Image 1 (cartoon, chains in turn yellow, red):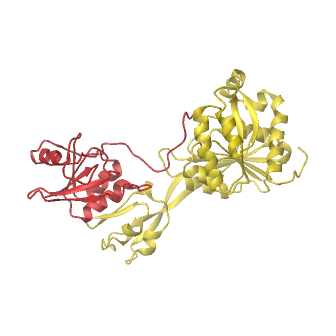
Image 2 (cartoon, rainbow over the protein chains, first blue to last red):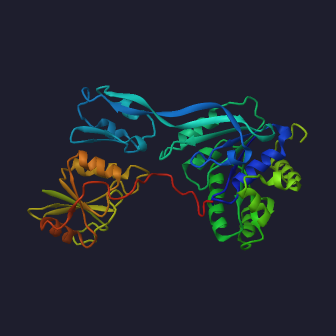
Length: 289
Length: 128
């Protein structure tokens, strides 16, 4: 069972929901994957001790200038314009390269080699209450988030993860697509404001386009307007949970404490959220919570 | 000398477009005869690498100088390698930019004038 926690709008409470959901269903031995490799923050709340690490790299072209005739075939086939041939000279732009290898395959002189370019690192370990935790950290200034997320999803530092909760980055761009792809369910965390609604619509559309079932958690409930509720009703998006706007919650989060840690009365509500997700995805609950 | 000028419309009297990689059109002018042609920029909707694609496009057409508003780091590196001189103009018409260049009133660019951009933004509003 893979649950992705996404949002559209940033700062709505994805990490709050992901971490508290994990802590509420310890009996199902949850694994948390923080897929927001550009700005991972779930570790600040769950405080894992990392004891496994793996470097993530991608292959990029390196041109052997003595073999290159400057024919320009590599530039022609590159979909990302990461390799150009100007005045007979080949120029590679590593940050534009997606590592597809087309340039090397098409080079008639076989003058293109592939070299490894480091993008970031994966880290895994055990966090509070025995939660198994892994995240990816993109190198500073590095734009290629997707390969790091893909590698994080494939990495299996913990065998037999029954429930995997992916904390996703905000927005609806490529890293979000990669992070929610393959999930059984997407939780869309939003706030009942025009901004929250605007970005929720985009994120819900993305989940639909990827054929993923989704439901909404309304955070900071009580502020804003009824727009989110109305849209969810019209579009048949179930609202699975509401977390009220409460200064005390904000203070606890600001001090690095998860919601259920500070307010244990939320544990049954997160369990109920999990049960509803199981029934929406048609999965049976395997073990007692 | 063949000069390319980024433009909003495919005309010699069009407004200059400030963005190099993602301008709508390039107006290519022969500085001696003032003969011009306009070409749609193939990189205008590129998902990434617009600057390098536009640079390759102009280099393939024998352009020797470019006038635009801003050049990003990738576009700068590509145009520099191609030996194409870059000049910045603040605005005005394509024709005016050409005359300003010929009157040596435009600043020659010796480094990227705009920050790095890349595909896949959209992290949503109010990222906390």
